[in-house]
Length: 311
Image 1 (cartoon, rainbow, N blue to C red):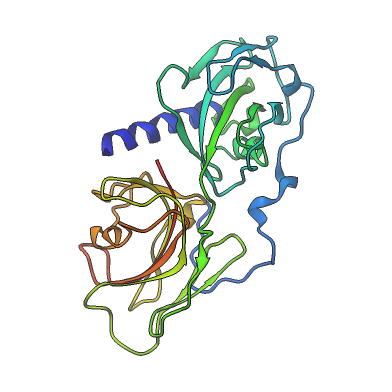
Image 2: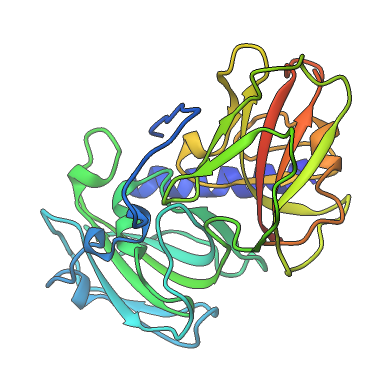
């Protein structure tokens, strides 16, 4: 499993490099009432360059792509070639895509995921910012052409635009959406920002936990996490003694793909098995708070984990 996750992470890293985290450490959060990640005003506009990209064929199958060459733009653009009927995707979500990358100068294919027999998880909000804006608010089931300007490519010395054609096949939850459960006295207090990011307050009395305890804050009704699952998780761990963030997927700007069986993380963070075992049997859409004692290099901490999906 670590090899599979590593291959996906490497492939997407290469894709981001061809066409091109802001850290947020907080224990108490405040914010506006609406989720800024769902702002469709941040999406790239359609333009003359992106409208020249043609891609025909069934969604999810290798498209026939036709572009004039050279195709260049000074400002990144996107056009939804085929609009899907699913939920809109937003920054802060992991989506499953198939993609093709072409060089704007020559029109030649540089990389494609079609033919691999698998979809690829793309974390919107990490990697190339123009690509995230290009997919922002496109519905699941869409085929999108994003033409990324040289200055937005993320590569040093880029002289030509990059063309990214993506089929959005699936989207995982941006945050836990399960039914809210009554809180249990004595557990850490959790307050959510509009994005869903948790702020965690450690109880002022009492010493660090010596054994693990779990409370379900939201009860999801999706698929069940198993001991061999690859789960899409958002998590924050706040150290019991120093009250600082110890580990957090929220700091990367997007959820993490984690192998429950061995703690392998796409963000290259080793998650404690004692914590991951508490997720087995829980359902997608759930949010849990876990009091965990010291586990290896991870100190005693209060964890809040959102279960967003299972691959």
